[in-house]
Image (cartoon, rainbow, N blue to C red):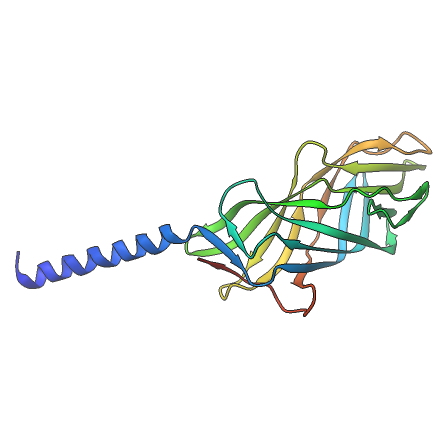
Length: 219
């Protein structure tokens, strides 16, 4: 093997080692802002042939600005959830302890838990972080087959996924919950509520105090 060939081989090996070390060392995600607000101009809840669309704002914080890439680890909490009225296609109320629901003041089921699930893409160029939201709870009201239904929905067993999409520069461009909520309590006046419904919608995420965009970087 010539000296030039040996140099090329050594250079290639060093480059591969550096890339491997960089990728392996990126064990954590760093969030630029610890507190956040996510706003949804139209978060949809659909099931049983009915779709309820509401404007929703949630606020919360990450426990630290560094998140270990450990599946199902608790990384933050949603401490405020507000549904603006009126909705379309029906009505909904968050179980936040302050809203006036048809049967009185809403019970307080906050905080909702935020867990890290996984990332999307190939290190170090990830395109999204998958989070899990658990303990969420709300009341939905709609007319199904001509009958008025009111029920409480939640996830007593599992969590719904929320995808934080990341652009090339690291900024979070959207926050998208996607999952199934199950009926946990019929509240009348008729027992016709759909057994489950699906969430869909895209929200914008910013820092709670400054309005700055959140970024995710690998460290």
